[in-house]
Image (cartoon, rainbow, N blue to C red; front, side, top):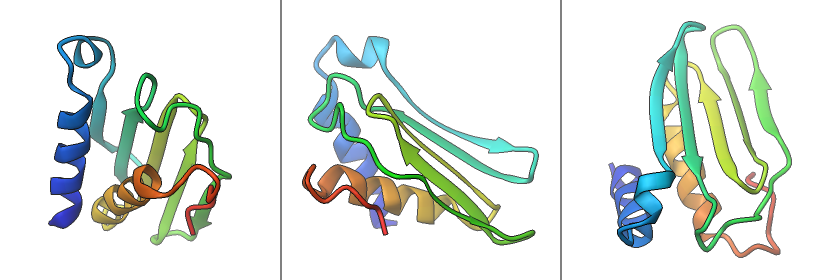
Length: 102
């Protein structure tokens, strides 16, 4: 998956013997069921970058994505992990003046 490579590259680019001791990326399962993805973006090139909440809410087809400028958060149904990682990759590559994710 290209999105996993992009995530690894972004993480590696921020590791400076300090950042990685304070900030993190977490991928977890949740009981809805589904996935939770959280990436700290403080002290990175996208710190302060916010997004409008993007979501779809259907019984078996759902996701929610938002950045508050400190943390990028994404949640989705069991089929959405790749989608969430792709959205994060888009987020970190998109210039700050092009905030919407969709």
